[in-house]
Length: 403
Image (cartoon, rainbow, N blue to C red; front, side, top):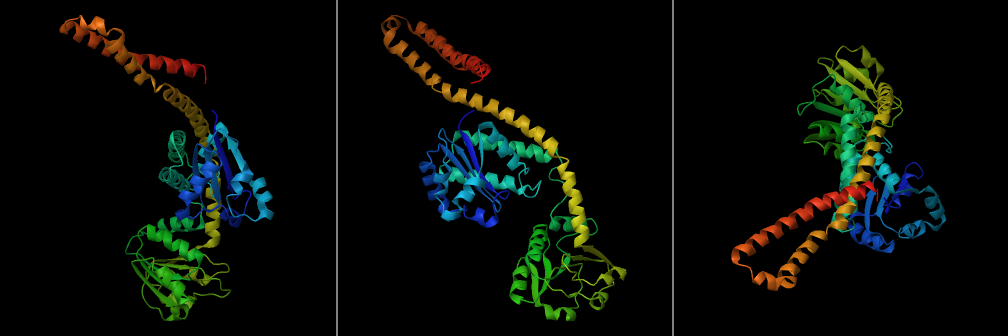
């Protein structure tokens, strides 16, 4: 196989800010990538950009010059060498294997994170819209998605939550039925609370009360929920409404939720999640009969165990990927045969037409109608068989010679 090149800039060698330099705004991508495709003399191009990687997936007979690629972006001249050194380059079957590994999250910052497969699908859909990809990358992406699905369904690579948010949610879900009626109280409105709020909203949670020093930030979190309200943190002690789950994460060095306040609600089963360092929630909560505490330390411990469980699946993933690479190589060869021979059916039709209308035209004129009809049937039969059977034989022969 020749012509596939992938140039990767990712978190292993570059910072998030540096990777961001290679980010193309969605409304600018069509024109930008069409121009880049022409500049680099590419046959096909897919641009994959996530928060921690940018991949240029290219089909071309030309050797891609990194300096030409990088010159299309607004990179500080003093950092060009950094990007050149950081670039990871893969070609042909090595590139196929690498793309499969990316789609299967073996190259991800979080092992087993399935979001990457959706991002690859979207990147390909964009390339179709931009007119930058064609037949070769079509079959490559199709096999990539097929391989990723096999890995995610046949191995444990994406099982067992590993992010702090997901682990906390799974621990909570194992003890309480979470649905639209579940009432949440949030203390804090930073990135952690925002991320957890988005997670539970996707799971169907609709009720939330948010307390924060900045009322504006509290309102942003509350706005994520159908029934969300925001309050100043100073009003927390006056809050007297029943709830099911308390989640706290502030940057304060002092306790935000004391035992006196918690005791007011010690009548029905409740859960408290403390993501803060140092603690936001008074540890005397563990003396209250109706509370169950989930703290950051226990979440991190379980996360580490789950990461190890995912790592155990890597060997199985790699076996599936290696098999898929071999299958793609065969698929690629078959497609090359199909493309090379697709002109044959039309050529056969032309030969038939020439025979009937030119070479043997006078002879055919001497035939009666019945004979002409039989001749036409014979030629149609031969045409059909010549197009199907010999093409199969030719494909087998060419594949055996490993073109």
